[in-house]
Length: 336
Image 1 (tube, one colour):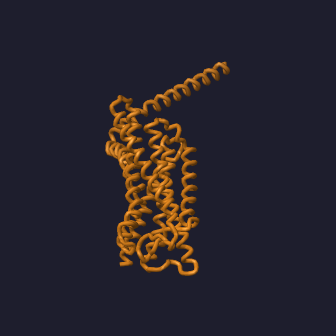
Image 2: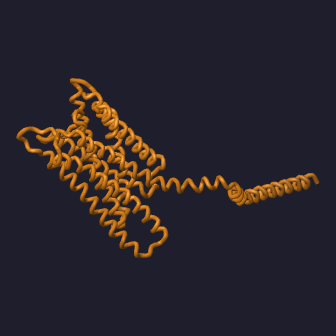
Image 3: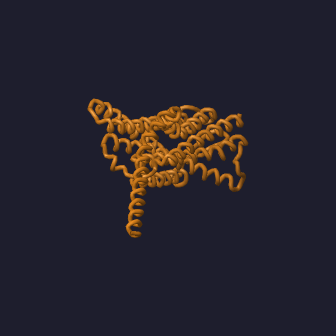
């Protein structure tokens, strides 16, 4: 049983790492972060959850899944327990960072689509928002895992999932941080995407130029993509709280559901991105492939350009002959 659960976690985390790395490489290789790309501020924000999801997957693949299989800390005492605490803190930071990303991406879509001020979300502002997002995530994770008296969250290999380290007679102060973050980072994107849907329904009745319609379709595709990610986040985020209060704490299989949902949520950013970009990639590659299969059209294209070169070469030759004739005439005059 331990081997089966650990293997499932390892395979799911490896798949998530591969998808997120592929998405990051795609963003970088297609130069979506360059200043010339009008959507670069959005991609700067979108890169943050992809990076934290890679870290999340690496922790599961390299540490947590093996710990479940061997039913012990991967590294023994005295360093093992301290490493486990550090890993729990890093996971908490990743969760807070991804939660805040839901808000920043939704606000970006609202400003661009509804307010129609894409100039407000510049590259510089996106970088500042991303940095503040990471700093705030570190502060929240440190508060929950170290500063508050109770109750930090740890990954327990024996129960296949997450447990709260409860102290007898001490209130769960961490819940005063975790629950508001869950509610805010779920409700704000939900309300924003609902307002975008209403706005789009109203704007579709108005006539727009082809260029504006094309850009708006691109913006709406991003909004739909992030709305799907937000729904996945809401489902995965509240599953831990729901299962904790609805079922016995010693039910290992129910905790497994929470972990599986968390792993699936770590893939959602990459999956939605790759699906969105797949349509654009195929639509851009298909004409090139078709052009290669039609050599006549390529020949027509090159032959349409070659007369210009031929004319230029002919003019140079005529000029050279004229200069040569003048030189011979001058030489003849000098002889006489």
